[in-house]
Image (tube, rainbow, N blue to C red; front, side):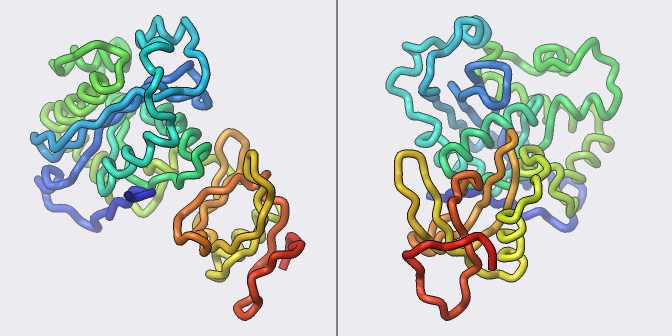
Amino acid sequence: MSSAAVFSRPKGTARGALHDIPFVAFDTETTGLHACDRLVELAAVRFRGDDVEGEWSTLVDPGTAIPAEATLVHGIRNQDVAGSPAAAEALPGFLDFIQGAALVGHNAPFDIRVLAHELLRAGLPLPDNPVLDTCAIPRRLQLDVPNHRLATLARRFGVPQGRGHRALADARVARGLLEAYLRDLGPAVESLVRLALTRDSVLLSFRGYASEEVAPSPLVALMRRARAELRSVVLACADEGAPARPRRVTPRDIYSLGGTVYVEADCHEDGGVHTFRMDRITAARLDQQKTPFLRGPILIGS
């Protein structure tokens, strides 16, 4: 099972080649209106051109009571999610489903930040798939519509709608909107899609949307140095409910979300990719090539 999704951005695409690119339209339902609220439903539709290649959806146990005001929006009750997987159990399946695809969402930054919080809580790496926002595209083109809500745009473009504010139904509408934009709005939308798929910047990626500016600190500087020099770090991390213990990792990326800084790294212990909260790293030092694995105290610094 893959722990991260990788999209190979084409350096050039011939006209019409967009039909050969896999897309995944996705949507979330949550316990509230904030990105740090918990996931209660996640769904995705994978398609290529006019062909739907598969659908994936699951209810998610948020580990907390669903507020009545949230249930009024999406209709999901506490008894509905009883026995459903927690986000940490559900997300690896989602990451596998989006492997190698460009993501499509309506007001995508919100859904991405919800998923990013859940991924980081689970210690999973953030994917770097390109992202297209079906809410932002008509804004960018200054389309004359009353508002940019999903239902409004679906009516404008004749996209069939299911039950609103349920993840799979809304993911299907997001897919239909992208197809309608490409069909009805022509080259302007094609150019925006190609920009998201081919630009060198990561601003239009899942990770780019989710990440905030990383506050400087000695530990951040240490991790960045290790990444730049392709060196490993010996660190001790006080995970929740477990004592701190040293392990050797090689940093891949550093990012911030909700004011918390994380380091994503290859773990030499089990060969997996793990994400560590920087505020739970109690000690760290750059590993020297011939230095044996340390089990005593380790200090921040080189």
